[in-house]
Image 1 (tube, rainbow, N blue to C red):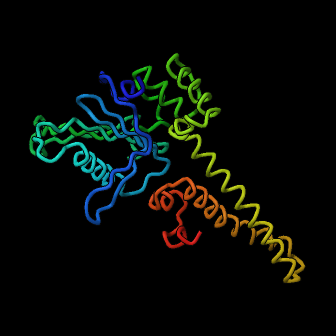
Image 2 (cartoon, rainbow, N blue to C red; image 1 turned 90 degrees about the vertical axis):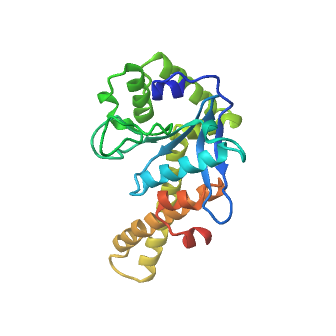
Image 3 (cartoon, rainbow, N blue to C red; image 1 turned 45 degrees about the horizontal axis):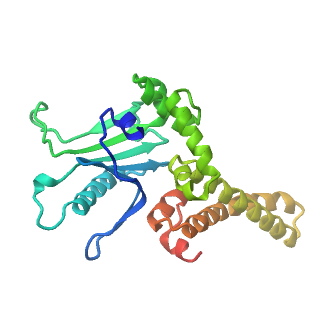
Length: 262
């Protein structure tokens, strides 16, 4: 199973995975939307695809884990009933710059490293680009597939078949998005459209100014305008697909005010 391969643990019978699960806390607190949310009888898993590494990513995992706990513990239940929780980030860039394929974090005593808090919360970051450094063959093959889209094991070949099937089936298109292919297509589509519009506008502006180097200046203006327009088109496509403002901001760099004006 996908999660078992990532975590090296045996996962029991899971509930049907929730894609883009939303957790909305009380009052004015910030809500979250989880990419993939899975649970079995003893554990809950949040699996996120991360294409950039913002400086506050560790605090984001902390917040996600806290809201998952709130979501899972009903009023009147004992703390003992809290499930073990995993927040997992599959990163296309190295999140900590140390070249490791996997970074696993759990609470340990600062004064005595042999004492673990055992609060049953784990945060795991996968650096898919370092797949060749992973000793476990199946996990290495999985990270390689996520990085290169190259299936080198029976398991990843099976995943690849499911992805191709999902791309042809509207009902399961969210699985295609899970593997980050859809997001790449979205960014590329917005970039190409934005560059085309920006280039055309820049050329027109250069001609109107009557400069002898209008075409060259127009191209320069177009490239600059195209970069911004690409971000706008990408943001517009993401907004149409109900992505949260914070995620659109992270990917495009546009301000929330700019996004709301689209």
